Length: 453
Image (cartoon, rainbow, N blue to C red; front, top):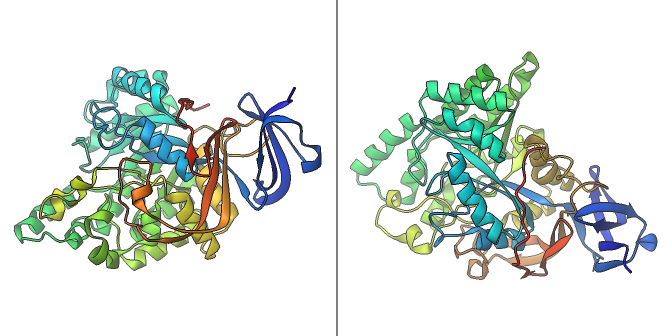
């Protein structure tokens, strides 16, 4: 009889900011043992990780599964299968669905969909919008990981709360011990610019960039930080895209010693690898909110990644069918967002291979950092006895070209089409179960909802 459910042998394991040659055993979904390869216990499933690197399971804190309400774009089965294909073991789903996840009933509807379909683990955000104050307590009781507040227009037509409403809602969330993620763009700057550009007859992709300037992000980031500190509510800045936004976050982190809320931030591969010059070639396929900005912003974000201003790498996986990305003559009529779950790990491993960041920093950005900020550590975010047996096992030397036609996601396009990647996920393991093995995905539902510990 085997003494473990799973053993991983002969790999290099990311432990405590270093790589250690050892074996790992898991039973009942948890890591139970780590030691020399020669002393590994027997197991029902054994993975030979020779030549591979075993990372703590990658956590993506910003995805849109489109389920319920727009499952023709994506659903929990296709979206979490895409996560597994890309090496992601836990996803945090955003609340701008139809219906929006703004109360306990809508949350239960989403949980039912996820329970039936999810291949990897998942957590769910509640929505902060106009009139949300009375729903916060019930959403916390129902197990949301945190809340999302949109400070500008977004897919789903979510109305941004007023400044006074946002202040009140942040205070209530702070008292409940949850974190708020904000889409930090100032609507009063963006909407007039879109109207002006439309009036000028601008239909090109670069008009989207011009409609969402750096100042819109900077102003919203500063306001969100001010309100969160007044309310004593931990704050997360989603999809940081600009040098000015990064500076505002850096200042907030340095001033935390004076008290107040904790501030964390994420950025995404598109803001680190693309810039304004790419719009001419990629057009609407790189349209996202916030917009991809200048080369100077891209370089400033890399600095923020390296110096700890940015705490996490997420994808903002935002799938649409290809017709929604190409229909209509104007860029403003085309959908914002693109799939990212199947490319993020590979893109960032490529950056590691190019010396843009260390592997240990990458682990902090995609496993340890997200788990700590959102209350899942040490259950998730590390490889150690007692933690969930979540692993992203990668080949850091594999060279391949990104081909969206092969995506598991329903969205078969990417601004990274043709990108030459170096590094890929080979196995994805969720609580001891192998959900992806060399591209083959086990879609039998096994994902579980994650709540803050």
